[in-house]
Amino acid sequence: MFLTSKRMFFHSSTVSRYVEVVRGLACEILGVMAKGIGVPPSLFTTLLTDHDSDSLFRLNHYPLVTDTSSSSSFHHGNAPIGFGEHSDPQILTLLTSNGVPGLQILLGNGVWVPVNSDPKAFCVIVGDLLQVMTNGRFKSVRHRAMANTSSRECRLSMVFFGGPPPQTIITCPPQLLKPNKPPLYKPFTWAEYKSHTYAHRLGETRLDHFKLP
Ligand SMILES: O=C(O)CCC(=O)C(=O)O
Ligand SMILES: [Fe+2]
Image 1: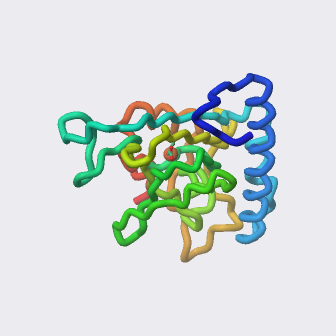
Image 2 (image 1 turned 90 degrees about the vertical axis):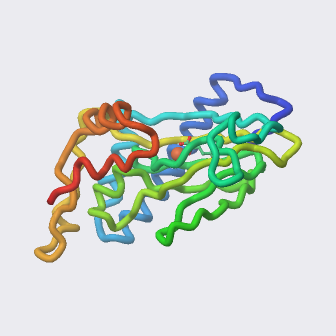
């Protein structure tokens, strides 16, 4: 299923099928990531395949912005922002778009970098929970979407957020802890993290609240 702005018709069964296929892809990617750091793939994948997995599918629509004056929208320098800076709270995000650019990620040196907007590619984003479960081995990336000011068509993005069941205790497995690598975060449930997230502003670094001293 590719996105085109001309035909924005989504049948619920198509969306359900799409979500299941993308969930499978997210599990494959998580499996490879788990192997890479020496933990069983099921540690992550079962959270997404569980019947109560709190995963989410979101369709973002960025209409063409012609009035870019600073009074009309949020700005970064001269560029209006479509979706403000944040990290995704879940485990793993898979994002695709209709090919109109806009997504940017923040590098460690503070530079915002545009992400290739190939409509046939997925952008894989590490979420906050995966950062905690790997004790910081994988980092949740801060990202944002610029408003769509240059393309003649609207921008659409389709985003799958893989999340665990609400009562899952989010913590780092003992295999990843060493005397010189103690846990960075205190354990919490996904339900707790979600309520913390929704009680704070989008751009806040929410994981700081769960950091161990
Ligand atoms: O539309 C985009 O490219 C970014 C959307 C996003 O970051 C989100 O929905 O969490
Ligand atoms: Fe996001």
